[in-house]
Length: 420
Ligand code: NAD
Image (tube, rainbow, N blue to C red; front, side, top):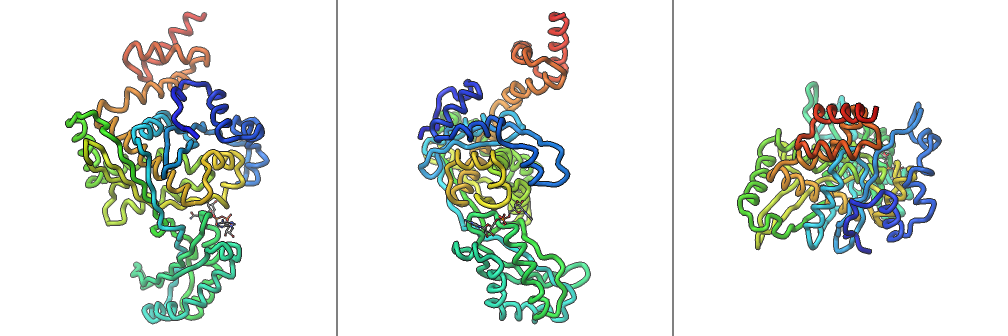
């Protein structure tokens, strides 16, 4: 399979779909699902959430040029923000050897909070003494997961000084394999809480997953060969821009938001939980006590730029909407992933590529020129341009050299007068 397709961005949506369908052997039915003809009905929606009255479409695009762990991959991205898919594709092209990833395994944490414990440290010890019984009780809740080699594997118990009292918080460490695992972990936490109450004399309050999935970490690395063509000034600006995100939370928030533009788009396209991944990413970015960059950038040999990213990635191929959303199922087929590890690696690589593209543009001539060109269509629509006039409006605005709400409104008004 070849994901480097020249001029992919210039083709029509139908031509792009034909290319993807051919390379991935998508059936006619799967193609219809992607086109939006056959896929997501109100009935499907009604089975997913409550009080349904319809659905809310988001564009689905494909990022090209990605090679992750020596395997070429087309990356489905669902996003409403212009420039994101183009930037990811462009950055991936500049990482000649692609991306290389590693994964700590799919360990999620479930928390059981105990209050009113007479002897918090004694209780902590008793919980550890009963570790095997606790794990057994958890595993009895999910024989399927256990049969796949997953399940509750270990405990981690903390005494936490709250505003009112010392609380005992038991963490269940559960290997959720190829599921995100929230339901699996929550079920275990609720099931085992009465036993923990019994051996500690405390009262269980919260019994739920922690979204700080610090034992489900994915790392990705990419080398961008001489991206500034020897321009030392541009290279230095890129590194300085990254360094600000390491020390200044105001910059880090925007730096990481750019990374999440890519990550969230793939997480959404695959029917995974965007909020879970975002909460985990931002909490992990602040794990040292200061909110920092999720990426690192270093200058390597021959002016190469070496990027790396590290963050929790609680995504699955099974469970949640990953299997109930028809478009997510086809997106998963396009990715061709068979494990949560593979999916996590691709998502982290997209985040790294997105960050490279963002920093390169920001530290270079800025992002507004390219971004606003793409955004111009949205503004034109916003001020009431007819579909047939969109290209003309963008072209005229670009010619004027100024793409703003005001200029586009003037152009749309002048076209309306011409049409009358
Ligand atoms: P799930 O319960 O639908 O599916 C997971 C189950 O599938 C496992 O428990 C296992 O029994 C079975 N299974 C079959 N094959 C498997 C395989 N290869 N690997 C692993 N398990 C396999 O889904 P889930 O992943 O437990 O929960 C995800 C859902 O929970 C998401 O929709 C998420 O939005 C939601 N959720 C999230 C939070 C949170 O993030 N705080 C809280 C509650 C619910």
